[in-house]
Length: 97
Image (cartoon, rainbow, N blue to C red; front, side, top):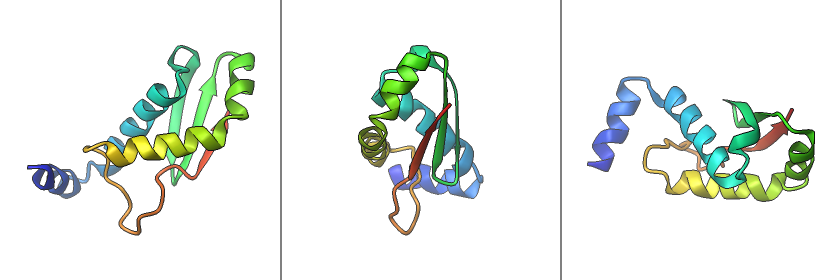
């Protein structure tokens, strides 16, 4: 069943939109900053997060590497996330604004 869902998502060309949504959800779960996150943009391995609090943004800035590793781990376990065929991590950089 899992293979069929993955194939359906690929055939219907829903991968990029679904992946953006899954990365955003991973950010909210892993960072714990859902309350302060205004929006997220995910494109070409770069996750840009717009944070409403400068204090929270500063704290998250120093945790970027840990957050990136945890987000990639979360996405690897996510059945709906379609990872790259070369096995590279989904999130390569986190930008906080």
